[in-house]
Length: 209
Picture 1 (tube, helix red, strand yellow):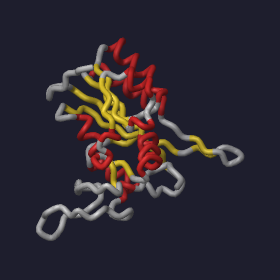
Picture 2 (cartoon, rainbow, N blue to C red; picture 1 turned 135 degrees about the vertical axis):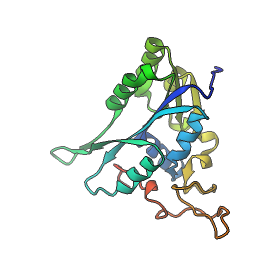
Picture 3 (tube, rainbow, N blue to C red; picture 1 turned 90 degrees about the vertical axis):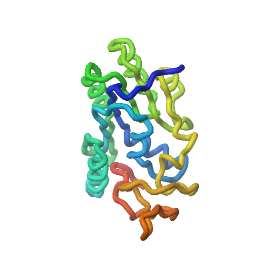
Picture 4 (cartoon, rainbow, N blue to C red; picture 1 turned 90 degrees about the horizontal axis):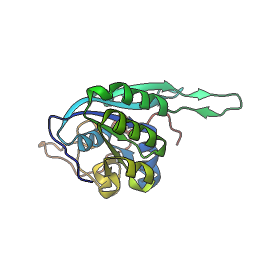
């Protein structure tokens, strides 16, 4: 389906951090470059809000990750992981992410969901048919719900060019400030693969290795 993307469109981006993290890890054994995800999804339009939904662990190792997102203009919604009797752990942002998207819908022309989770199909349909706004999805197609792809007005498949969205991907990629890799001495970009410890932003929160 052909859709219109123009500079004056007011866009809100809602990032299911857990979902993208697991997809990148399972499919490519790499980390997500969230700055590039936002850039590609936005496509030159007017960004009103970009929000990432993340989980804070007991170790608080993710502090650098939160700060890196904030420097890129991505707001963080943080929830503590819940530990139940018997050691079971639970934490998800599905309802919170949906509520935020609905609450902001009247101030937006386009909502972009960065997730492959099929649980968001009702949200996509509600936003489209209640508010009449454009709803787009960006995710890895190999781990994304087919129903979600069908429901969205547009689907950006990160699997078509994974190196554009990943850090530490063996296919190699250029340097993006704040997300791993470093320029060489004369200001040119280095082609060296970023190391795991180059930037705290690649250390995802709420996940056990």
